[in-house]
Image (cartoon, rainbow, N blue to C red; front, side, top):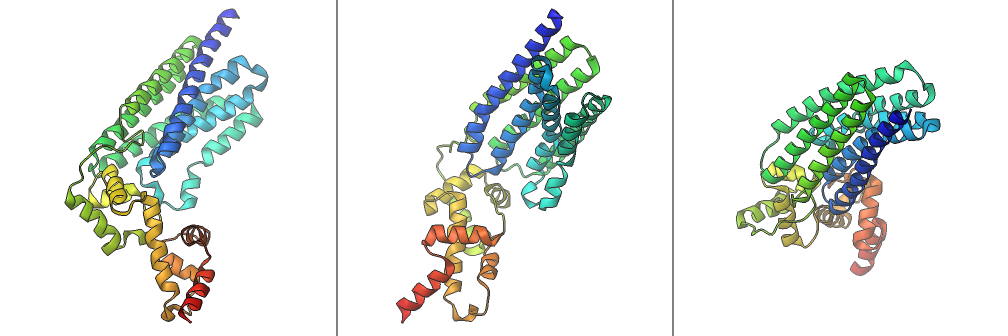
Length: 333
């Protein structure tokens, strides 16, 4: 019994260590990665891994609430694959129902683990989710290989992320195949090492940490970014992201970010909204648009929802679209 407790404690400590590391990831990816939604997805991936490993804490140390640990662990395990795939499969262009469909298994399986525990179905669900994770990782590798390797620095970092996820999956498989409690704890320990390895590699990657590299921007690159906004009107594309524009122009994302900052003195999302609001303001005072709905004008310049448009317009102008029209009429009278 003491040996079981010791092994359980060992696995639990490994889970605690990973959770602590994930808190650091969250700080970097959610605070410093303001302009890049992909950084936040990476944070979610490692949060999911921590949930899977933290199952040891609940299962071994808090026996009375083990079902909660099993449910959270399964949700984390089953969420790793969908998050990894969507990270590289241009998830920003997928419809919401397709995004949600990837998480039916994590949610449904977690409910089964919570309400049906203890049950043989728990082991079956965990093994099935581990096998499905392999398929998701294959899909993520294929999607990654098709991407334009314009941004070599970020590309190498993403490649290391996929390698880390494959190693994490291998640790999970080892746990399932061994069936031994000591092997289970060792699997959690090695998984923790993989997470730490990737974290320290990320610390040495400025782009991953949200830091802009000190670079001299070539004039032709700056001009391409300027043309994308002022001539092509890339901001009209709904849901446009800095990574998407980076792929279109075949320019690293950090170069696009720095060029936007140099040209307009704003972040990428702020610049997108600046151009959208600027065009809507022109349309609002054009008599030819008097019969058009304000929401229609918002959709024409790339806003996806009326709420996001009204919020952005009020933030940039200090008044509502209708208020702006009235002010214009008073000034023109």
